[in-house]
Image (cartoon, rainbow, N blue to C red):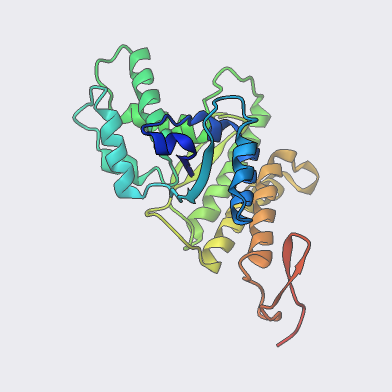
Length: 280
């Protein structure tokens, strides 16, 4: 998030007006301004700004503010603010909702409250209950249900076994997050979903947690192969393989979490850090 301050003759003459649209609509200009400041030539900033076309007031980027995603306490406070606009049922617990929405931004939480109110309105309810919040959370995180999608019995059976594979692996991996929901109702682009949620906010991940997620991602393909045979596995595991591959790649090239036979010395190759293959 960039914070800009007006500069020029208007600062000396008195009150001035700052046009925030300059910064929000000119990312290239903002980058050039920052580079110009680094060179100590502020006159270039004004020259860049004069080409933005939105206002005649020069804007100088002078500070960078890091805005992190809210933690569980912050999410609860944000939910309280947005929930003031709707009538809540007696069973609604905002702390429980905040606990189940890790990684949500303030905009995501506002969208969650709005979606829950819309769902309640469609059911002709005068209050929003916990069920509407749960349904809205599923829609925001996993996509809308595609109840009208036509699937054959074979497709439903294969999807059920595929999702069961994810669930079984998640249940047996001690480091895995607990399962929140498993469904074979198509949502978004997925034919089914096994959704796990962390019990608390996590800021770093251990080797066993990452390996558990890789195992969980591959559980669906393994279930297909065990039940239907090697020749009848499908492309349904494409996104799972993509997730597992990215996790494994990040473990090696970004986190330095590698096998015991390789020393954790990384060599930069292009945009990646590749482990130096040296035995202990």
